[in-house]
Length: 88
Image (cartoon, rainbow, N blue to C red; front, top):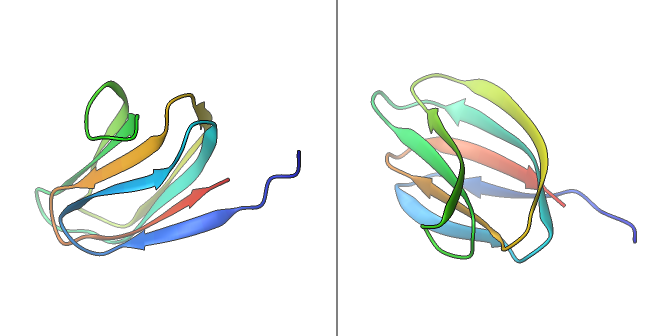
């Protein structure tokens, strides 16, 4: 199977289902941080279940994962950050 990288740019406090089962989370880039904001990453198609990470989103940065999500990939942002999620 050939994997093509895709992206999702998230710019508000929201819950975003990025992909279904077997989605591979490549990277999360914080383009614009917000003080006291967080990014929570779940291996699920909802904002619950197996948590992959909780990231403090107060300053720009790049986070590399390279993990395959068995159930799905959901991102929860607590502030109006500007992040880009790369996945396949």
